[in-house]
Amino acid sequence: MLMAHPALLTDLLERYEALHVLHAEDGSVGARQRLEDVSYTLCIATGTRDIESALAAARRQLSGTRPKGDSLVAGA
Image (cartoon, rainbow, N blue to C red; front, side, top):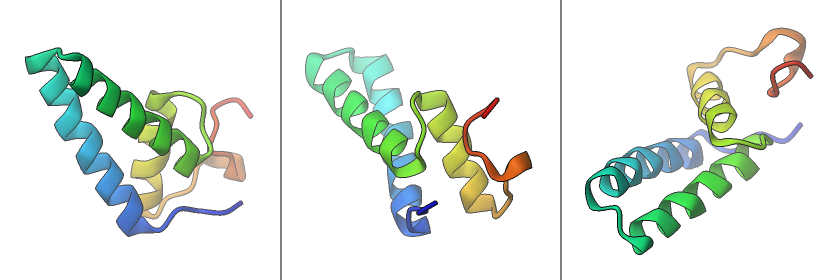
């Protein structure tokens, strides 16, 4: 499986966290759209289908650990 470069994952995680806070504080359509965009990109970069799995996979990849069975998707 292809894996995203660590610098890309770090950037996406930082952007997600900042936009998550901004959306919680601001709630604007623009903030929501940017949060959805970075969430989608994280899913694509990690080969997952939802943001919680994407966040977990990105953090796991950055920490250097691998999930059991080499799968990035729970239950796969």
